[in-house]
Length: 263
Ligand SMILES: C[S@@+](CC[C@H](N)C(=O)[O-])C[C@H]1O[C@@H](n2cnc3c(N)ncnc32)[C@H](O)[C@@H]1O
Image (cartoon, rainbow, N blue to C red):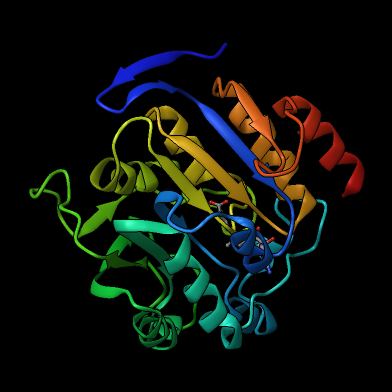
């Protein structure tokens, strides 16, 4: 069911999601300039490949939700085009959050700054329990906080450490939606459009729908589209199109079924 709500900008359709299944940069290039209010994303970094090579991500390779062994890696050498497009599609005065490990942060931060972003600080996702690794086993991940123009956070009292238990046995490298709920509540308003070019299980979309934001998500992996479309349908997302610019409306269940056949 589609709900509408009155906001200062007029009537806004709630719980609308748009889903797409292609390369992240190609998807961003299709989006109009200054069309997103907020982007939160979690690319498949090269460093994940390194962890896999030394055998520390077996759990991720054989997750219950995935029939694929793994997903494609997005090479660090593509950060310039990714951040350039991310900057272009974000509205003036908006935020961009990038999930990241410490190794990738040193590469990603200067590239995002070159694209025009202001870097504020890394936020810490505290997973509350130790995970993989052989020395100083990993208990946290980083979320780099960038700004285009100037946008005030909605609550200046929120800490830079977000403590949420990790997800076990989900989509590979799935993030708990509670993290994105904090970021979305801080950096957007109801009815605004939140995007994720590497959506995986759709955790950012789930948080957006819960908080009555619109969501536009993409992932190269058809398995992601299948999982995310079903999940967003279950959460009551009302309407979806594979590509807002060109495609006819489809229901989330139609998208999930098509993606299931392509896996
Ligand atoms: C770390 S996962 C995202 C997990 C997600 N944040 C969640 O909570 O489920 C990274 C995703 O990037 C996708 N991916 C890898 N290369 C891509 C590309 N070139 N374009 C779009 N998606 C890509 C993978 O298929 C994978 O689903």
